[in-house]
Image (tube, rainbow, N blue to C red; front, top):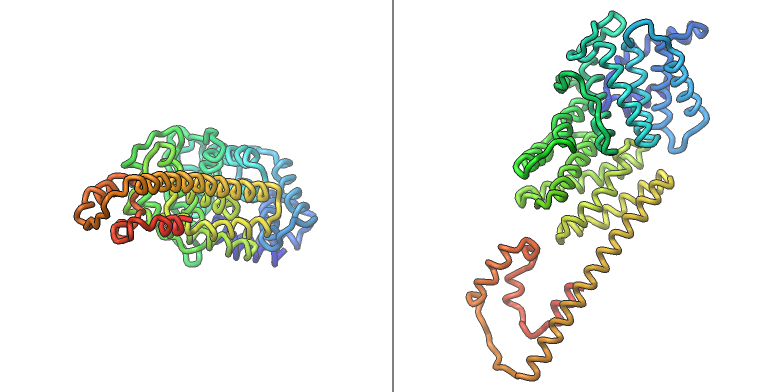
Amino acid sequence: MNSLAQVYFDKVDPCYGFIDRCQFNEHLDIRWKSPLTPSIYDSVLGGVAALGCLFSQRNATITELHLVHSARSCLDDHHFSGPPSIDFLTSWTLRLIYLRMTDSPHAVWVASSTLMHLLEASGLHPESPSDLLPSAQCDPDLQKRLVGLAYHLNAWTSFDLGLSRVLFQKDDLPLPPSPKPGDYTVEVLGLLPASISLDPGRSKDEADLTATLYNVLNGIHTQPPSVLAQCNLMLCILRRLHTQKLDIPSGLVEQVLALLKKGLGCARNMAMDCSPWHHVANVPFHIICILLMIDTRSSLAILPEAMQSLSLVTSTYDTETMRTARSAACLLVLLHQQRRKDDIAIFSQTLDVQQQERQISSPPQLDPSAEDYAWLGALVADLPGLQRVDLDQFLNADMTDYTSFLGESQ
C-alpha cells in the first residue's frame, strides 16, 4: 500500500494535487492498526492505491480491479446524514480521475456531473447556498484545488461529448490555488478560464479566438501532463478557427508548430514512463489532423514524428480504440497524399499542353528580368495558398526546364 501511494504522490499528485499527504499517511496508519473499523476514508485509500497501480503497470491486474471495486463500494454504501463530507468529495474525485483514464466518455461525464452536484450540496464552493458543515471543512487551498479540478474535469468531459456542463446559480470560476514547490496543479487550473470561454454555446469572433490562442501559447507549462493540457486546449482553438473558416494568425504559426512538436515529445515520454494521462492517447491523433489542416511544408514536415508518436502510444496501450485511431490517421494521410498526386497530375497536364503549343508556334525566346514579374509577387502575397512558393527560385530558374520543378514537387 505504501509503495502504491508513493507512485500516486510521485506521478499524479503533482498535476492533480488536492490531498494532504500527511493526513493521508495518518489515516493509513490508523487503518492498519484498526482493520475492523471501516470509514469513508477507506475509499480515499482505495482510490489512491488504484491510481498507483494504474501508473505503475501497463496492464490492469486483479489487485487494481479489487481496489477500484472496494473504493466504489465504500461510496455506494455510504449513507448521507447531511451534506457530503470532504472525505467523500475527495474519494469521488479520485474515482473520476481514474474513470477519465480508463472508462468511456459518457461514464466520465456522469461522474463529473455528479461531483459538481456533490460540491454544491456540500457548500464547499463559495457560491453554493448550503452551510459548510464541520465535516466538509478543509484547508482553503485544498478547497480551491478540489473545486478547480471538478470544474476542469466537468468542462472538458462535457465539451468532448457536446453535452451540457453543470452550472451553479452564480457560475463564477473558483479562485486559483497557491503555487507550491514541485506542484504544477496551478498550471493546469490556469487553463480553466480559457477552457470555459470555449464553451460551444458561446460565440467567439476572430479577435476573441486570436487573443485566447495568444494567451494559451504564452502560458508557462513545465511538466509533460501540463504541456499536453496546454496543447489540447490549443488544438481546440485551432479547430474552432477552422470551423469558422478563419486562418491561424501568421505571427503565431511558428509558436503553434513548436507547441505541437513539444506536445508530441511529452506524449512519447509519458507513454514510455507508464503515465497514462488521458491526453497521451488523443493529442497525437488530433495533432495529425491539425497538421493536415494547416497544410504547409513546415506543418507536413512534422507528420512523420506525429505518426511515430501515435504508433508508440498504440503499441504501448494496445487497445481497440488506439488501433482504430492509428488506422484512421493513416487513412487521412493516404487521402491527403492521393489529393496531392491528383494535383501534380493536373500541373503535369497543364505543362504538357504548354509545351505542345510552344513547339507548334515556336515563339521567340525571351529572357525576362525579375522586375518584369513584380505583379507575380503581389499575387503570391494576396493568395495565402501560394505563400509557400519560393518566388526567387522560380524567377531565377530556367523557365523551359519544367522537369526540374516536377521532380522537386514529387
